[in-house]
Length: 425
Image 1 (cartoon, rainbow, N blue to C red):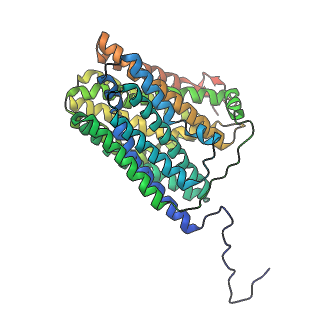
Image 2 (image 1 turned 135 degrees about the vertical axis):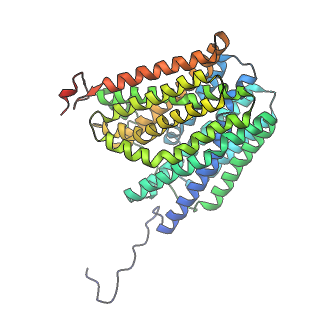
Image 3 (image 1 turned 120 degrees about the horizontal axis):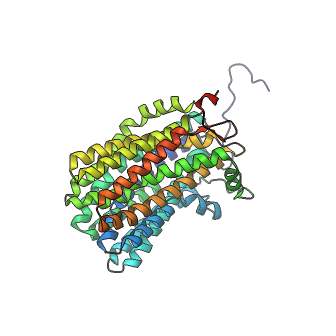
């Protein structure tokens, strides 16, 4: 119906469950605060955890098993949310962080009961995962414009990297002064994030609760796709290499006896990711347009990380050399972050985009969990039997193999391999 001249149509009121633009803006600010503060707590805990376990003289296998479980549970949120009603946004976000704070505080109160401490910290990993999945789902659900959604995810990653830079330094200094104080401060940061979330997130927001039928169907479809399988293998191996940063690396660098200096390595890593994120993303985006682009980028990731591990092995805990190794590692990490999601979406085939993203999340969880186990158990076993440098050289060799396989592989349109580059159109 045409409106009379001089009058404008009234704004359409939001329907039930559809927030206003002002509520969405307030929600985005709250989510950035949530992720930022939580990142400080997460990364004050994560790099120091393997050092805590080693200090208990638990043995390489036990250290690796705990790191495996912690890493796996950090990515289990999408499984938990799919099976329970986590539709009310503010209570879920607040309670997940408050629960994390409570669990860390409880771990600080029972320092001599090591099994209890481990179980409590594994519970923290689940809480962090539920919070992370809810935050990302809120952006996907309530930010309807694709450009605005991409910008929101980019800001989320930027804030995460900026805030996480302070976490390792804070955790290292506090832990080596007093593990009890370290846990209490981490609990306080989680509690602060819960409080800010409870105040800042608009009330009444709800996520849709529909569940897709045959929830495991996307896994079977992904497993039948040759392109998806090969992308998953390449991504898995790259994340095995990446996970050494928070498993084997802390066990190695905190042996310097200078926790603040060792913590500066993680600070440099986080700062470089922020600086390199945009230019590296643009460069990777141009290469991803090529049919071989994804595998070339996986190979580049593995090559940077292999060089980093080789340098780390020769460093003999000499800090300037370790810094050079961290720079090489960060270059590979930044490339991986810029291209991994797109690699899965590009070969999704019959899958919808959400299922392709779930496939990426599952592969990331597996890769980081297996890598964390290796960094905790195999690294310590190598250090006890020979020398820590042996482990770094072994990981460098794995990186070279992954890089060579990725660069030599040529996908065809049906996802099968061709050896001849001339076959590519």
